[in-house]
Length: 486
Image 1 (tube, rainbow, N blue to C red):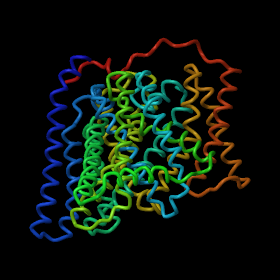
Image 2 (cartoon, rainbow, N blue to C red):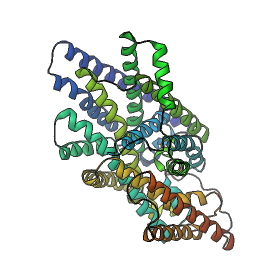
Image 3 (cartoon, rainbow, N blue to C red):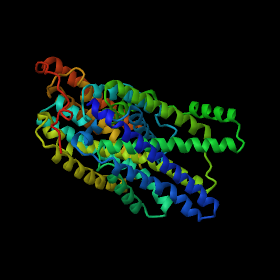
Image 4 (tube, rainbow, N blue to C red):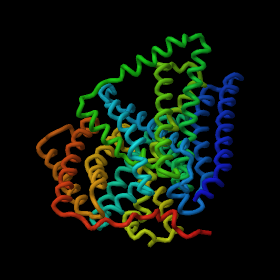
């Protein structure tokens, strides 16, 4: 394994240099076209269009050669790149939440932020220490019964596709406005780009595309700040504006903030990049990089205040900033949904029962199928935040309780079955008696939190009354131990 990591260092630097050079070239072309008087629509469209082509090219270049690369990026992704990938997903989640037609003043920003911190520093390293290759792997290993495998497969598909639809919906808004196409056409274009950035390399493509997206986003925001300073803006005033913006984040009720924190922390989207690094320590460093990138981006965005788009080049850069993290959110959801269709939740408990080549082929087919389903959901959704709230609510109510039970439960499905049944019954009872707000919004997370807590309590009771089997020996990572492939 160490030989693979060392040998991959040179390609890592080469790909990063290529991506940086290509991004710099795009910026030069945008400003040059504006200077020579090119049509405003052409200049404005160049930003999102170049971002779409760029990430598609990165996804193709990161094509996986074997199962180990497709599922876990060969456990050789640098911690800094995995951290940037987490940051890109968090940025996409923020944009999708803010895309709601309703007021954003009551959104639980503090709870979401706390959830991202917990996911980056605790949850991701935890699953990496368990040598998991995905959350579906965690479910199938801890709860191997047929009932739980099917139930968690359905949950993973529903939440993954909903998350992908949310990212696609927001990315399509940028493409629609930039290229002056219909909403349906924009969704189809984004869905095709999503397939190209994920199907060739799986997690390997996801890490590279997301890291490039986060790097480009930070660079563009930094460029806006530099241009503001060059235009005579007072640096002290900018810093004061950033502080004021961060302090002015709206407050939500405490229970809503707690629900948002729990849903975000347990969500698979932020743990996935941590599974691509070499060790739990590297996963923790990746989380620190993600939080640093998010802090820098938030401070810079706050210092800009209400950005006024004055020129076509401004429109091009804003469109690129909106498109890239939204696609990162879509990739996170679609990759998680492609794993169950790749036999994880039906045969992974047998570990080596499925041929690696067949698993890659099926997972790639699942990416294509999932992209089509996510496009349909994005089309019928009233706004991008609706499927996002659906994914967060379903995950918090029905999946998070069993993830919590993995800390105390041995390799037995009984606690998970009890948790699932109790959560479903409590959710149905709440709906029948009219408790909570059924609309897609923060109140949906509050109801999901109640159902999830009931599930955790039921699972713990069953764990105490019906102990599981004796502890199984620690399982080695099956994807590292696979035979060498041609």
